[in-house]
Length: 119
Image 1 (tube, rainbow, N blue to C red):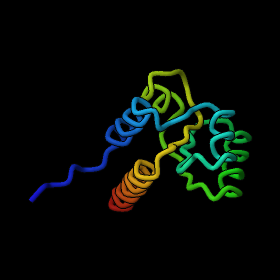
Image 2: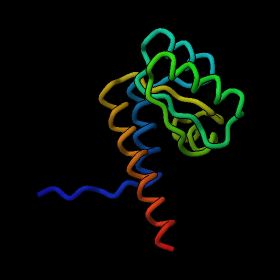
Image 3: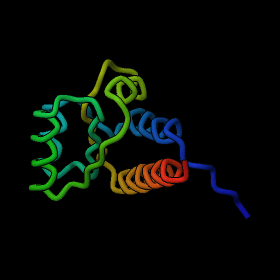
């Protein structure tokens, strides 16, 4: 039986990098907004430390366009995962990878909350 690897921030960032290399990710405010409005985006990931105004606007577009969105990592970490400068927003364009990343981010968040309440 195959043992599941634990969900870590590095594992999620690695999957984001893989998405970039596979060509199923777009980044940057304008490109992400366009991907959502055109129906190409499956998942919006917003950095934890981005501009509140920009994050609110993209979150509103995601809600209007029925795109799943999550907040994860810093802009520096997201950028580094895809070999770029700081990125406050990235969009995953593939349904399979979008679902996988949503699950991983949710599981990581749940594990961090459980660890925090255990202390």
